[in-house]
View 1 (cartoon, rainbow, N blue to C red):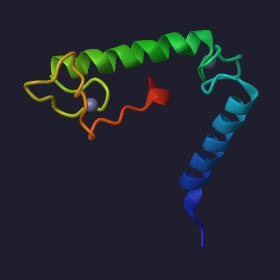
View 2 (view 1 turned 30 degrees about the horizontal axis):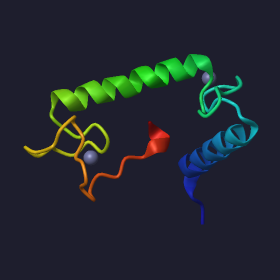
View 3 (view 1 turned 45 degrees about the horizontal axis):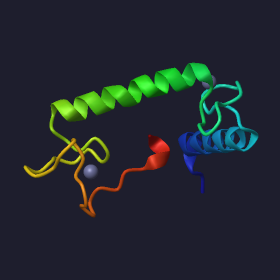
View 4 (view 1 turned 45 degrees about the vertical axis):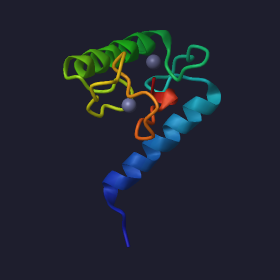
Length: 93
Ligand SMILES: [Zn+2]
Ligand SMILES: [Zn+2]
C-alpha cells in the first residue's frame, strides 16, 4: 500500500527540517540559524514580519494574539489570560 507522493514529499521535508535543526541551520535555507531560533538572519526578519502581521490581524479582529480564539470582555492586552483554552506555542513565536 502506497501513501502517495504527497505524504513521502512531506515526510522528506520534515526530515530535512529536522536535520537542519540538528545542525543549527535555518529551516528555510542552508544558512546558519540565529542562536535560539530555527531561522537565519534573513528568514528571521521575514518570519518576524509574518508573526507581526498575524498579531496585528488578531488584534484588529479582537482575537487572542496567542491562540487566535475570540476574546471575552474581561480579557486585557489581547490575551485570554488564565483560560485553559489558551495554549500558545512558544516555539512558534
Ligand atoms: Zn534562511
Ligand atoms: Zn488565547
